[in-house]
Length: 405
Image 1 (cartoon, rainbow, N blue to C red):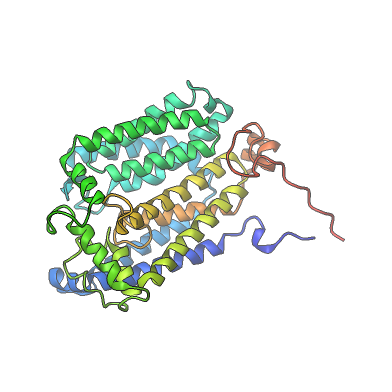
Image 2 (tube, rainbow, N blue to C red; image 1 turned 30 degrees about the horizontal axis):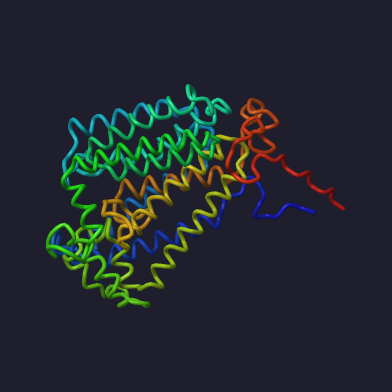
């Protein structure tokens, strides 16, 4: 019996590539539909935002191809320098960053958002850190305490930029990686409680964050032009779309009713124009992306690959869940773009670079020196030394192949 071609090592996961391509095409269609009037109004060019997104997509494609071709263990050697540069950028934006929409998050005239760039770097660094600890992460002195300090420092810098939503996404992604790597459940519960308490303090000490919670609890009550205005307009858009939608380009709410309709509110425009069916198709594509991502994680040849692939997948899917949850009034309103679909250079390039890294892991390659260092136990399954992993089946040794007849 020969191994299935789709399961051969050194082959890219082409089903993942097709899924990402479909999401990118949907994104381009919706961005053009949501911005042609805005582009003409502000820049006398209906395709202004569409062309900019195409340019960013070209840069993202280059990043995807490069990261897919580079052996993924390479990034492990540079995880500390990359993390140092990321921390520098997060600190720099607090000093000279450009303030927009109530936050100071941008550099270079709004072109670069360091908190977006930090998402991938932090996942790489934490994957390296967790996989290097092995069973030691179960000990408080090696696991919970240094993990909490590291995570607190990173998210603290992002919170200072008034970007609480990104800090939350990084926090829950890191906790998921800690859980997958085999961290003790009680340590994860303690971390969650500490994070939840901190979040409660940050919300109750901020008037605008508290008003968002109030409008979320009762979005249809109070001043229709007040705090609940945006979610009201989003719900109108979704309701207008019905089952099949008004038709591509036929949205009415994009004409100034939904603020940032091409970024945070893009799923509402999609629901209005393509209806419930279109929305479910997009959710289905993200679900399949999650399936392929975790399948790659299960097939990885070492702990670093498994935790890294899981972290990348969690990061993208959590972000998509938050965006869709906000648009459907299932979560309090917050500014989180929909990965691969919303307009935005930093978000798109980082998302595509993340996919490139997933594709590199899908090839299941490992340099000879790395394989020798990890040892045969690492190559055959998923670290027998780390028996506490939460990924099903990965701690079992690989089954021998039947002899060819």
